[in-house]
Image (cartoon, rainbow, N blue to C red):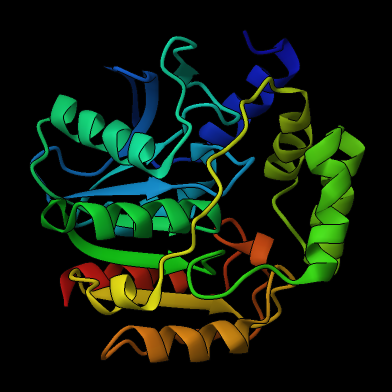
Length: 280
């Protein structure tokens, strides 16, 4: 059960989605998955996967642009803050479980193949799925992906450790403010992120980072957008590693973006660049 304050904060950010947005709950063997959907019902589908500790609500800017040409479904990750509910009898514990959950979700939606956009941990989830089920992913966008091409920065892990061990609203907010260097964030989304610390979650699946052979076989056309001011990792090291690992991949740097400014406070043109990847 979610708390009243969390529910109110969730609905406040959800209200920022464009007119015509709908919500739904989809049953899977791993629990129920909550979706926020926008765009023409008969348009090509794109799934949006948030970062760890975030909810589907933060994709409203992306949905407003991408929803003009696609049917976008933003997903509350099972076991993470939001309105998806994990089945305790079948927890998601491995990368194979994540793949099974996404397979079941797409099957329930009647989607043979989809585009995927992921941020941070959501980018790792999207990449993991694209490598495991290449025929079900048309195109892929990774926003400042973590644990995909390099590891985390040690100082980020030190800052994040208190949040991981005993999350509180104050600790969540302190990590956000430190990582973004005090950037102006949507205050309603920032409040929701703080309250996410009060949400009962399960331990997320971590790793493994895909090896060079698997990355070299990545099939879907992939766009990697890196936050130039990210403190989660060294974005330039990620750029070099991604370019070396995936033939033909040319990551793009967003010089003014921080890791946690994506996607809610992305630099101008970011959502349009994401949309172009699915229409080019």
